[in-house]
Amino acid sequence: MPDRGTTCQQCGQKLEGGAAFCDECGTKQPQYMYCEKCGEKLEGGSVFCDACGTATSNYKPVRKKPRKPGSLGLLDELLADLD
Ligand SMILES: [Zn+2]
Ligand SMILES: [Zn+2]
Image (cartoon, rainbow, N blue to C red; front, side):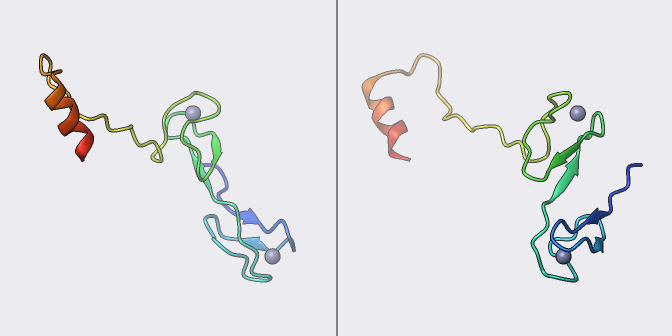
């Protein structure tokens, strides 16, 4: 297991991994996460692993509007744009 502890970049205080703010100076700490697949340390907001490209838990597939095959009439188009 990698060491998940972190150090405040502002004052050098040792902090628990995942600490959002420094206990000592209150500086907001960057959040890190680890790739589920290869264990690469990633920035907290990462959507894909830098090393292996695996999608992280931040990955939210874009929801496409369901489009029924064969119903591409003008009315359907208009209704689809209403939501
Ligand atoms: Zn600090
Ligand atoms: Zn990875």
